[in-house]
Length: 166
Image (cartoon, rainbow, N blue to C red; front, side, top):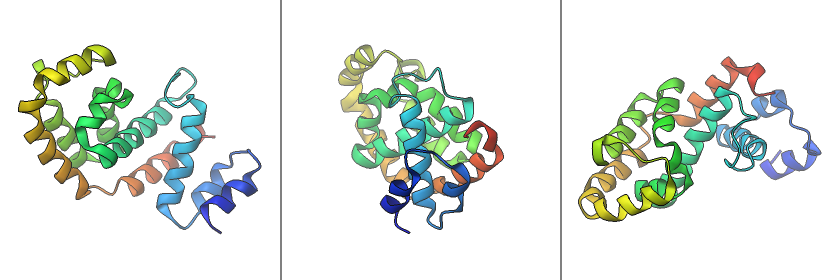
C-alpha cells in the first residue's frame, strides 16, 4: 500500500497502530509528522501537544528546513523559534551526533543563544550571516550525512511513548 493510499483509507481517523505497522520508516515518520502538525496547527499552537509530540515536531521541522535550505533557512524560518528545544529533542530521542551538529550551528549566535523572537532573530542573523555561513555550511554537510538514523530513532521513541501519540 502506498503512502497516499494509506491516507485515503484512514478516512481522517488517525490510527497509530496502523501507522507503526507500515513497512517504510520514511512513510511512518511522514504520517506521524503530518498528525502532529495538524494537532499543532502547523506549529502555531503547541498547547495541545504532549512533550513527546513536541519532540517529534521539533526534530522533523529541523530536518525539513535543513534539508531544504540548510541551517541558514532553519534559523530564518519559524523552526528557529525552537532551536534550543530542537537540540533537547534530538538528545531525547538519542540522535546525539545530530544534536552535536546543531550545537555547533547554534554556537555562532551571540552568547550561543538563538533568539526565540523571529523578527529579532532575523535581524541578528543578517548581522552575523557572513561570519556564520562557513560554520553553517559545514554543519549542513555533516547533517546531510545523517550520522544518526532519525527515522528509526523517532519510531522507537514513539513506540516508547505510544500513549502520548494516540
